[in-house]
Length: 467
Image 1 (tube, rainbow, N blue to C red):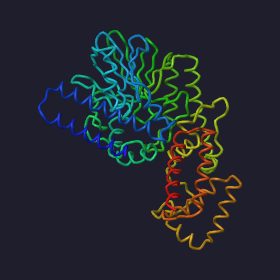
Image 2: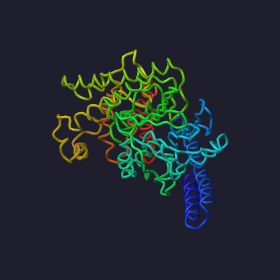
Image 3: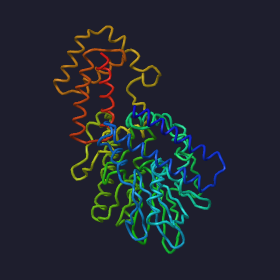
Image 4: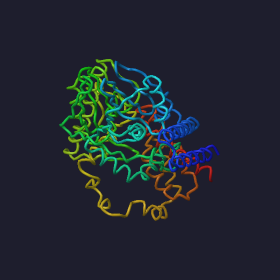
C-alpha cells in the first residue's frame, strides 16, 4: 500500500509541475514551484529506501541517508553533500561547479548552498562523467552563458545509456527493488539531454585561469567509463576525482558492472592512475563521501590500486597465453598480501572474466553451440525427462554435503528453469544461496554479489510460499 501511495503522490506532483510549466507564470515562480515539488519527490524516495528491508545496509541506503549540507572543505572550495556531491570553487571572476549530484536532490542541495553562499555566479559546470548521480543537477543550475565541460566521449556515453534506459533501469531495479518502476519522464528529472560546449580529449588537458586560480582538466578514461575526467587545481594540489576511485578508497576497480554498461578498459585505467601519481595530490575530493587529506594514505592507496589492477590484468594475460580457461583464472588469480584492498565494489574474479572477454570477446573457443541462437536451457526439460528425479536430488545433496555449492547450483538451475516447478529442489536452492551469501559476507563483502543473492533468495521464498 505504501508503494502504491508513493507512486500516486509522485504522479500528482509531476502533474502539478506540468501545470505550472504550461501556463504563463513568471520563470522565477515556475522555478520556485519546481524546486518544491522535486524536494517532495526526494522525501518520498528517501522514505522508500528507509522502509525497504532489502535496502538495509546497502551502499544505496548509505548514500541516500547522507545529510544534505553545504560546508567549506578548503579555502574557496564548498562541498554540498548528498548521494552525489556537488562542488563549487569560488573565484573573484565567477564560480566553477564540479559535478551536480542527483536530480531529485538538486533542490535541497541548492537550498543548502544558498544558506552559506547565496550569491553564486556560475561560469563553468564540469562533469566527471555521464552517470545520473553526477549530472542530475545540471538542468537546475544551468543558465545561459554557463560553459559545460565534459570528456569528448560524454555525448556517446550519454546516448547509449539513454537509448538503453529501460533495459538498464529494469536491471537496476532487480538489484535495488526500492527504485520506482520506471524512469522519470519529466524533463527536469529525466536523464540525458545535456549538451556540453567544451570537450576534453585524452592526452590533451584543457587549462584555463579564473580569478587568479589555475584549472586543469584531464581526460582519464577507464574508471567509471570512457568519458571520465578529473579537475586539478595545481596551486592547491587538490584533485576533484568524481568517481575515478569509486565510492571507497582504496578499492579494487569495478571493471565489470552487474547492472550493465560497457566493460571498462583496464589498461586505460592503469595509465590514468599513473597520471594521477604524477600529479601527486595532497587532497582528493571525490563526488561520493568525504574528502581525503592524508597525503601518505592517498599515495599508498593510489599505488595499491595501480598495483592491484596491473597484477590482475597481467596475470590474466599470462594465463590466456598459457592456454588456461577463464574459469581456471577466475579461481586462481588473487591479490598478493601487499596489494590487498577491498573488493566491496569491484571483484577480482569478475575483473578477470571482464578482461578476458574485453580482449577475446564472448566466444571462448570451446563450445560450438556458443556460436548459435539455441541456448543450453532449451534441452533442460528433455534432459529432466530421462533423469531419475530422486537420483538428481541425491546428487545435489551429495554436492552440498561436500561443500561443492556451485556444482549443486548448476543442477538446481536445470530443475528450476521450469518456473512451474514446486518441490524439494527449491529447499536445496534456498540452502545453497544462503551459504553463498554467507561466503560473500565473510570474504569480499562485494555489494553487487550480495544484492544479487538477496534477490534470488527473495524469488526462492516466493516460490516456496506458493507450494
